[in-house]
Amino acid sequence: MTFLEQKIRDAHTAGRTALIPFVTAGFPTLDTFWGIIEELDANGADVIEIGVPFSDPVADGPVVEEASRRALSDGVNLRDLLKEMARRKGLIKAGVVLMGYLNPFLQYGLEELGRDAEKAGVHGLIVPDLANPYYGLLALPHEESAPMRAALGKYGIALIPLVGPNTSEERMALYAAEGQGYVYVVSVMGITGERGGLAPQVAATMKRARKGFS
Image (tube, rainbow, N blue to C red; front, side, top):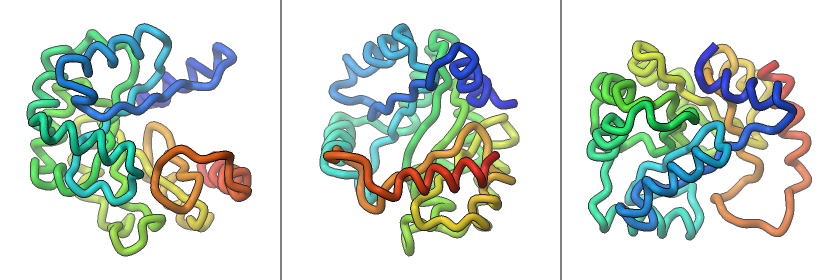
């Protein structure tokens, strides 16, 4: 069982739903970002997803896009983020997941990424444009995610699968066989952002995901 799985199971054992907040790295400022992480950790976050800023976050809405733009303008980058996380390793009780687009990870180098992420106390990665048919032509097929899975797996880091409303049960079963940590269910077709309510298909998507990953 991975550390991420254990954190979620511990929450369930305690009779509650696991809390997994998301924060863009370096936002709103470099000075305040780490204080936010510490506050989330101290107030019950089971897993914290840290967004890696990217210049073309095509799956994100205006709020996350603007946060990413501001972080990049302040000089936030993956290498410095991992160095600072390594310096703080052991101070955060929550599981730590990096969420970002494939390009910065490829530019970093997959082997080096796995090694440095382990040193930084990272437990998993979410890559929206990798192994996810929800994003259509922007995504690589699941079968082509093997190099990243291998590079991360060598260091005990989970590559967290994503599924969406249009992911078939057959594909979910494929992701379940390879995925670790937890599954990220994309609830609606479209970019991230606030909505007035849950789309009608959310319940059906969750039901299929529970079946596929049980």
